[in-house]
Each structure stands twice: as C-alpha cells, then as structure tokens.
Image (cartoon, rainbow, N blue to C red; front, side, top):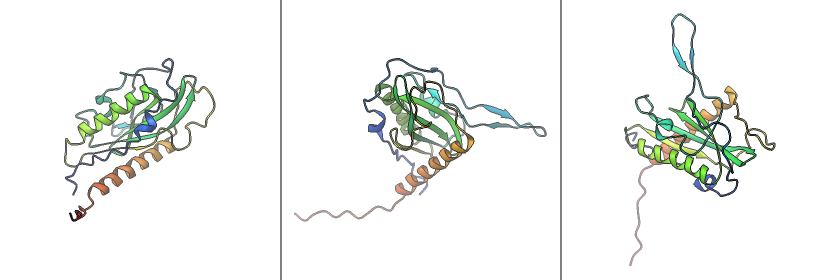
Length: 200
C-alpha cells in the first residue's frame, strides 16, 4: 500500500525543546550551505552531488522549508536524524542531519537547546508534514534524539567551531535514515485491527 504517504514522524520533541542550555549568543555562521558538487573526470563530464560533511550553526530564521525540502529537485523523501552535539560555550547542542531520498546528506545543523532548538525542530517537522502529501510514494521521518546516543564529537568543553564528519560516519547516518523511513512505512501499512466495543 505504497499509496499511503508515510507521515510517521518519530519526533522526540521533548528532547529538542527542553530548556537546558539556551544560548546567550549565536555561534558560528548563520548561513546554510548546500552540499557541494564535484566534477568527475572526463569522459564523460558528470556532476555528482557530494554529501555535506560540515555542520552549520543554526540561528532562528537561517533555515526555511526550501532548505529542508526544496521543490523541483526530484526529492521524494526527507529523513532527519537527530543526535547529541558538543557542549559549546553557550550551552549544550544537538545535531540534525537532513538526508534526501535516503542517499544524500544535504545539511548538518548544529543547534542549541531551548527556544532556538525548538524553532529549528518546528521548521523541520512542519516542512515534512506539508510536503509528504505531495505524492503517493512520498515519505518523511524524524528519528533519533537530541539527547540520545554518544555525544558528537567526543565531549570536551567549549567546542565552538563547526564539526567535520567522515564519509564513513555519513554513510552510517544514511543507513539509519533509510531504516527509519522503511520502519515508518511498514507501520503505516499494517492491516487495520478489528475494534471491539465494550457491551453496555
């Protein structure tokens, strides 16, 4: 029943919107960088997308729906993987890996907890909810937790710079993204259970 859109957003909103660690000032850059393109050797000349491998510090207003799920790109699913980020001078952070079609890491956002983190989470969740109904086979999922799993990178105080991720780490992120989306679709395709009403 692939004509059912996978609208199962595994959202751990409480983990992201918790009050601990609200920043006192923004760190890093407010711009969002698209994943780069690399030119393959001739022949032939082919533009191949390369996964985004560096985090971008989120500030309110710096990320919009078109960053999460741009139109006219052939994107039929967006998966967002959340995990703990480093402790910065402004407080604790979480990381949001935005994956397109299960095979391309488009963005890596690093956000503080509190109001800022909740704002980013809302932008992501609202974008997925609005776009997942655009096609019969479209899918979207948010998985993981902003306070779960090992802290990335290995914790030490005041990691204020952006974080670079290896290709093997990004491959693991994409595997998690695909598995989460397939799990959500499997759940939605379960046959309807009979409903028994208690006798009056």
